[in-house]
Length: 323
Image (tube, rainbow, N blue to C red; front, side):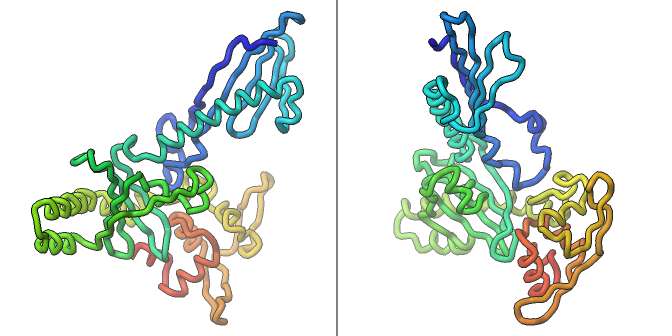
């Protein structure tokens, strides 16, 4: 058989044509959307037929005789592809290269001008924004400004670090490798930079710190704006209403169906539950967690019921993660 035609496609999820359908900060830059599909048409002169091979980076493979078989034949693994194995190897190498090209785009904020998001970290919601140093692009550096527990901090990197802040360390490693971005400079406040400017011994050093001070000032409105929107319920790390048609389904997300004694309708959807549940803490005390606590915890990105209990017991409410 000979290769008659081969091409790659980057499938665009139609759900994202008009923006993120989940309207959630945690899904806006989801790397799992970086996928690629490869097609190959094989010609078989002896049998006078063509075979259409398809492979994608989600692990799907299939072969179909054009204008003959009504459905493609899927293969569970590369070993199952028989005579087509070498062609699938070629296809999968090509789509892997395309997927990494898409991930490289996602991993560089220069392709977005500026990016701002938020995560739950260290018992607080951390707002962060990143921008390339367009003022002096020759320096090839990136600024990340964070706002957490009422404190701002500026980080200077030699490579884009937005996705490292956006993802867990494990998730970042699975998509982008273990070459984690490391800041080359950090500054705790504009006042610190003003002091450094005043103490500078020459104009070059003063200019260096002025550039960082100006970046600090330039990025503050971005983190302030997102913080206010999250506080007012206009932005969400995880949007409860958009992700779950039935808000009570969030109990399944946290594995709390039994704890809240969920009741189900004929479609096996939750139609009733307890309004609250009392949990025991490691120190022997107890804390009552309401459905509203669960809903708010999900929107703020709290990962599990243990964290929810600890936050409410320590600070008095789930909303405290925004203070």
